Length: 340
Ligand SMILES: Cc1cc2nc3c(=O)[nH]c(=O)nc-3n(C[C@H](O)[C@H](O)[C@H](O)COP(=O)(O)OP(=O)(O)OC[C@H]3O[C@@H](n4cnc5c(N)ncnc54)[C@H](O)[C@@H]3O)c2cc1C
Image 1 (tube, rainbow, N blue to C red):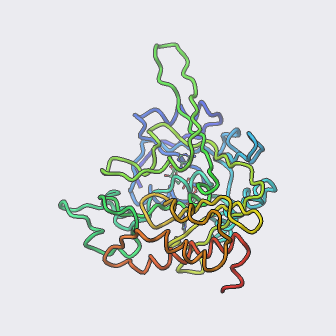
Image 2: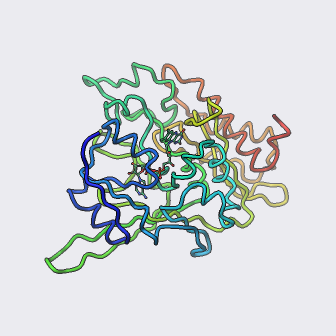
Image 3: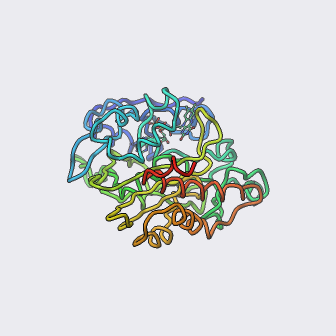
């Protein structure tokens, strides 16, 4: 591991100041459960690591603007145990699926959303696009865990976030904070905040210097906001290879509004199938106006994967992703036990 400065700010302004120095070559440390791996393996080389755990205004879960606000320092265990989070069933499904107390005790929701890909080429130093001598190592190599959607460009990794599908399905927003640049010496820099719909947070890089999110150097997520749960039904279904700690091979989350047995609103988001979380617009639109039966869920799952373009070793993932969509829909409507 290389040397780096370690800073532990206590206020938002202090944290943003520390992050914006060194030309923005800094890294946020939340739970540290993934960041420490990246540092140890030399995948990233920040000049300074800014540990945000002591920023008290970024801690906890509160009511906010008709919904619920989760601070960037809130651990997954704290979310799981909090009464305000109980109605967001699809998030709780993810926490229950992690099955590792070390991760749930330390890991955070914002840290998960900002997780870098677990592509083995990327983690072994070949960059996000995994190129060598102008060739894609993914296209010609072992691509069994890579993208089956959105993979026509140079990026073929899958988005690593486990919470992105469920939070995007909830139409979550994130608060992104930045310090305004100093215009003149002696003029105080102020915090600029932007509330960004989470579905616009992720991006597919076209070069190795682009990131997997729209965050710029010196910016970070301070909070995640979820709208009121009201009568929405939600679920996440993850297909995991191992019974213990594991990355899903495919996942799907949905939020459904159901009235008189008929779907009135639907949002379906897949994870671990594309370089960004993948919103299945057509399948969700088709569901509206229908009763959610097992047959309807099956058809919607096929529609969600209809445009899949698997690579040489991962066509098995198409069926897994279809299964994840179908089971998420059935789980949200309490029918999963009947078909398993
Ligand atoms: C042994 C081990 C196994 C793991 N296995 C799995 C697994 O099977 N499945 C899985 O999904 N994950 C796994 N993880 C990854 C990780 O634990 C989770 O993704 C966790 O939720 C990350 O949260 P964190 O708070 O620890 O993030 P950190 O590790 O602190 O940060 C993760 C990334 O996000 C950035 N970041 C953190 N907070 C913010 C913020 N507020 N704003 C902007 N950027 C931020 C960091 O700079 C870093 O790049 C594993 C980790 C370990 C150590």
